[in-house]
Image 1: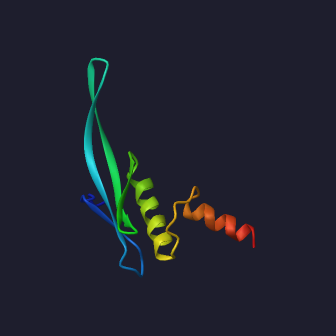
Image 2: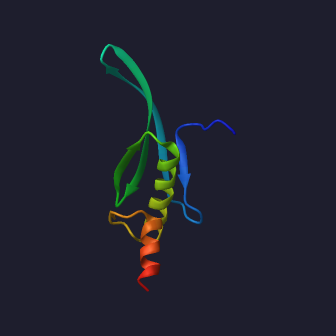
Length: 95
């Protein structure tokens, strides 16, 4: 598997919408020991404003970025408590 380069660009098929995932190595003190961990931040623009979401799971954040870009391309700009796949399942079940 090829090494992922950061910042990583998430693209939506068929549109020019993109989101960017940044990686940051962070450090925190736990008792008398320093612990390093990786934090990923998804950044995107919605209605002219920059929004961010953070996670320690790159693949989950990448999936979230793709779902978010799909929603934005379909005109669903409001935040929604369900993920895109959950919302699609719900809509199919209620037809």
